[in-house]
Image (cartoon, rainbow, N blue to C red; front, side, top):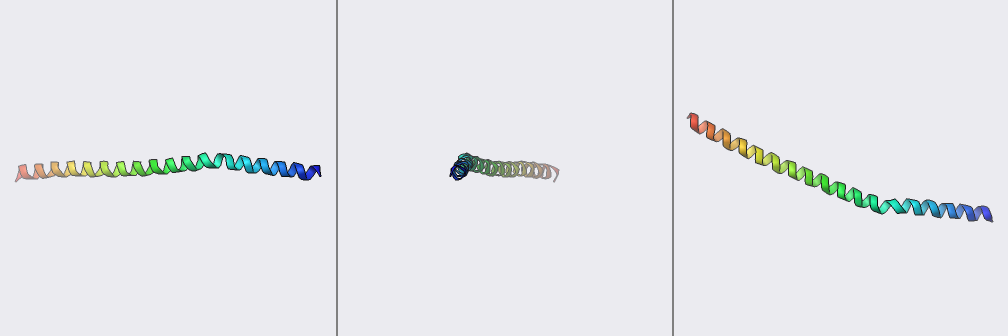
Length: 66
């Protein structure tokens, strides 16, 4: 029947359209996750470096006082 044919085509179209963006969105999500991870690593490294710099400055400052 034409109605069944139409429903089947619509179903195929919906499936196709749904499947189409899935691949790129997965890739985008993976890239986003990697970028977040890299950002966190960079922030952590930056924090460690700044703590080390502050620590060495404080040690120098204390050693100058005493």
